[in-house]
Length: 328
Image 1: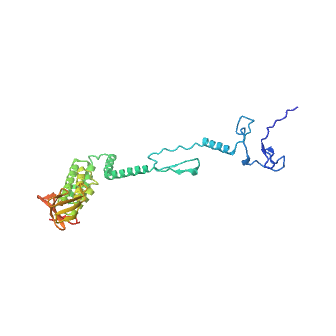
Image 2: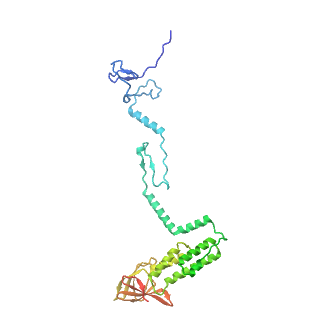
Image 3: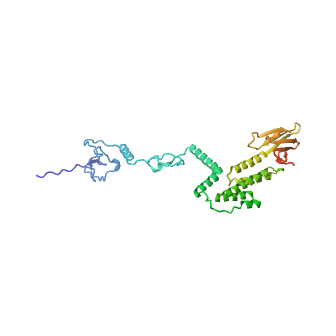
């Protein structure tokens, strides 16, 4: 007698018409004869045994909410979220970061306004430093990269010839600087010192002319502005500051005249002087420098005690709401 072959029992489902139990593989109900087709997704049920449980008797059906929760938990285990890059000074402009696992949920990280303040401040400081010290730093970098000039280099230094020909002093200084930087010889260094001395003498002679002319101070300012771009010697820097101070001292305006009490009021535009307005009488000083000689109905006569020629101070006049002019 042959052994009876044992087949595993089919899983069951309910007929959608008569609600009787039929095999999950059946395509026609054996009770009502209706065609049932393959089971639909929305009526599929799972038991603990289907999910891999060891208990064969448990037949509890899991709800769709539980299945969805299990699926989301499985995705979190499989898909590890990317590590968020820490915020540094190099990514202050923000970056895209995922707030969820869905691509459509990406959003741009907002930037702290304090970071913009720090960036703007750093850029401003860098710009100011570059303006004042950029040429000098660039010159030092060039020297380091190219090395010190060799002693045996030759250069035809024409600075003294240009000086004798009364060529512009700023061009003469440029020639002297180029010669010394090329050869690094003591002879060229002495020529450079001589040209610098001539430059200082020229500027001082313009500033201390007996007759005051605003065009003279403007020319001195122009020369110093050109020279200071190529020569960083402290002597040149002091000369430039002196020119600026002279121009500022003469920037004053006569705003009021009291002919009865012989008083005059001046508005001062000199940043190096502590007062912005000063009222004086005859015999007193304006800005501790300009002596008030005479107060008239429409103008005031002054003397510049700082600039003298053969012991005589420079004579000036300033009209009401006008500019300082020569009174010689």
